[in-house]
Image (cartoon, rainbow over all chains, first blue to last red; front, side, top):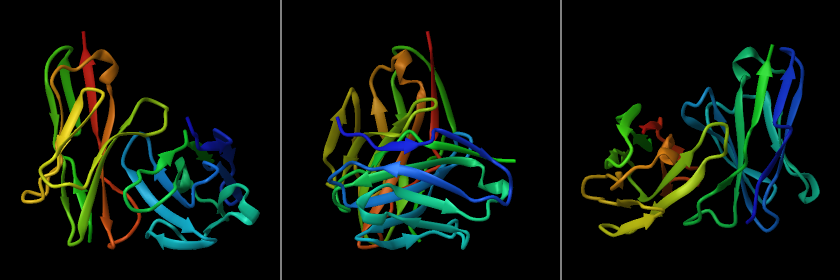
Length: 114
Length: 113
């Protein structure tokens, strides 16, 4: 079946550096999401994206965060600069519609900020 | 604002027994409820979804009924298997209240032989 791919699966960086998390969503999907999960805890919404624009963002989506999907390629989450509390697993999801369709999640990128 | 409450953090039980995981929600908009299951180090996968009041929905032996009168969408299974050990999330999309899925804190189910 269709899959959302996330690259890399694990990223280790030093605090203060920039990191870009990549997501390859399902090809015909139009809505894209990022979620943050710490150590098997709650999935926390960060941001969703449609038609080249951020639709909604949560309080967790700090000024250091940005998202884009240039020319229909990867949907990326950039954190610049990173902080220790950004260590978590980041899940990308996509869906064709935003009403009754459940987002399909990728396997996540584990980000470790040292 | 919109929210989802899952009261059990951990449920431990023996294979073959029934299980019910509680989920209640708060929203002023028309709700769409989801159950996701997440096995260790894997992506959350959709288990069930519903926006229809008082209609049971089933998948892979799990079932749930959305009750708008009590704002609930409890997940049940008649006989759990070892492979059901996982983290279960209830999630809410309050249509026209926002497009993001709001997740509950999750319930870990641990099934022993």
